Structure formats: C-alpha cells, structure tokens
Image (tube, rainbow, N blue to C red):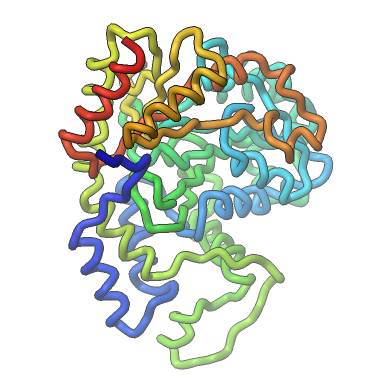
Length: 399
C-alpha cells in the first residue's frame, strides 16, 4: 500500500465550482472572492475577512498595517515554521524567539512575558497542529507588562490599542474553537493558510481576520487591506469593469497578494463541506489515540481544556528516541509505503537563523521535543483501510 503524507480532499463539487469560474470569463479577484470573504466571516463570526495569496503575505500585511519596523521587537515561538518569523525580518523588525514548554511544542508563556520590553510591539503565537494557544495567558502577560508599551504615535492602530498586539499564526487552526469562539475571533489579528496541505485548501491562499472593536472602523480597515494587497490601487480590475471606467489612483506603492476567483471558488466549495471534513479528521485522531494508547508514545491533546482542535496534524512523540532513531523510524515507515513528516525543525536549527545568531542550545525544550517526534498522515480523504494500515505499521515498529 502507498500512502502519501497528504492528499487534498477534492470532490466534483470543487471541480464544478472552479469550472464555473473558468467559464464565467472572469478568473482573477472578483465576485467569487468577495463572497468567499463573506462566507468565512460568517463562519468565524468576525466583522470582515481579507483573502490573500498566503498566510505569510497576510501576516506581513498586518505588521505593515501596524507600522512595525526597525527598532521594534516581535515575539515568536522557536517551535514553528519559518513563515511565522520571516515576516518579522521582511518589515525590518527584530524577532525575539522563545523556547517551548517542557514536553510541549507550545511557547513557554513565562519566558514570553519575561521577554517583553519597551520595544515589544507584537506577539505572534502559533496554533500548532490546529490546537489553540493559551490566549488567556498571552493577554494576561500583555496586561501585566502594559506600562512598558510605547506606541508609535504615527500609527493609527498602535494608538488605538495602546498595548502589545496579538497577531496569531492560525495557519493550522481554521475551525478550532473554545468557549464558542472560533479561531480568527480570539487574537487581535489572525492569519490563515489555505495551502494545499491545509484542512481547507485553495491550492495556495490565505486570509486575515480581526476581532471587532468599537474604537476601530471595520470598513476603513478592510479598505486599507485592499489597498495594501493590490499595489495601493483604489479600484480593483473587476470594479473598474463594472463602472465602465478605466480611471484609478495609486494611494501608495504597496504590494500584490490578492486571491483570484479561481482559488476562491475552490475555497467556497471546501467551506461548504468543512464541518464534515472536521468530523472525519477528529475521528481519525481518536482512532490513532486508541490504537497507540499502550505504546511508548505521546502526542498532542486535540480535545483538552474545553476546546476543539481543527485536527490539522497528528504528532507521535516516541519515548527515549533521539534524532537518528526517529529518522530510522520514518525510513522504515516509508519502506512500508507510509510517508511521514516532521513538524518542525525549531527555528534556531535552520541556517537562516543560525547565521543571525540563534543557537539551538539556548532552546533545549524545543530541541528535545523535535528530536523524537514524527507526524503521521492525517487527512479527510484517508480511507478506513489506509488508516488501519498506518496503525499496523506503527504498532509493528514500536510494540
């Protein structure tokens, strides 16, 4: 049996939706993208959603909206993908990388709070594997250090918040929720991914959301994001065709990261099926949990603390394994046709961050978690036969 690490769950519904756009004569950003934004906003109960071409672009736009740049510090966990941190460099700010908690990939919140200084403007927590961070603890840390915050008076949004702003990396957590709040409506700003391997995919793509505030004009904020994502141009191409006028202006020389209707059509079809997709992913997690309960392994708790995970990734951390043993396990699984992965190499292990002065020795918890963990296939198009085969392979290697 050959089982890839991931396979998009695409049905005729998605294929027909994309075909309809292709036949419509309008394939870039237009009415389908706008409707997808409305659908997502309703799903997450947020005032607006801005669809873009990636989570990375969305997070960078938020940092630029907030006026983050040279001299500012942004806190980010060590145990994440580079996209969470690279955007900090994109805007010229300084990343402050925080080690994980013992026996957990989640950021150590005590270290996070201790790292807050007068230069700290943003914290970027990561909902790793689809499990929500402890946002209550993050907000409390911000409140505890509120007197240190120094707003850039030239930035509208720093002046409104008058505190450190939370920009969540929610690439994994669409649909996760706690206390009837969905991911996207918990942090101040959130940036989602719809990459090919995500629960809901548009092939490539992403979205930005924010919480409602009485002191923030949502329409104006949405308009600013539109300008930021389309060269600073005050009318998109579809709008110009509708009003039969070529006239436009460029407010600022900004960026190009809009989502086209082709991708949005795929996303809308996926979103209609998304509740069923989540049910399937949760069922697979529970089956894995039960099958591995007697093995010397640990994993993420997708159903703890009254929250519901999005079930994006299944971690299998093997007791007392080092990197070499872990890699041998992955090779043996591959020999049996099962492709596994590792999420992630901590940032201080990557060349780009080593060259910038980071040393994994200063992040022992992140390294200790990484060295023995494997990510098993987890996606809604897995068949029962494939799931049983994966379980059999794992048990044969570890029992």
